[in-house]
Length: 140
Image (cartoon, rainbow, N blue to C red; front, side, top):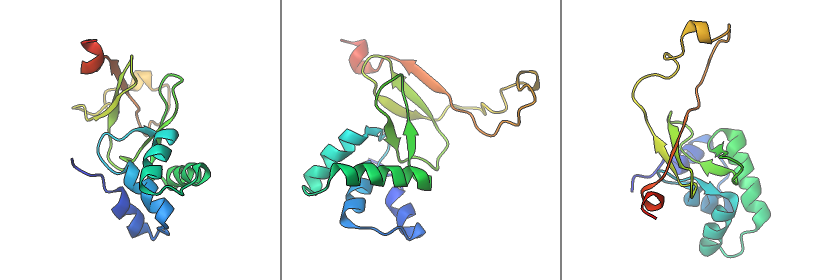
């Protein structure tokens, strides 16, 4: 598995790396990671049984505030946390089970929006979401 660079980015920022913070960052580190706060808590507890729910939630909030992790909201489901905050990408989401994968479509979606459809906006970013059924749900 190719790991994200979340831990390296946090070290470079000089983020105080307590045992609890390190465990949360380690749980989030990786490709196609989109865990809910409760999933982060469950995985962190396996590594560090004394970690509290409040510490996990506070750490996630701090990582989002720092811009090192992004929140992904999908159709009323629990927010998920994506450590791939510094590499432009879009999401492919299973409409049935909610599985999420990072995707990198060809082309520039910003350039694909004609001036006539910008209504005077200065557009700085694009969020696109692809939806469908994952292989597991497609064959169920």
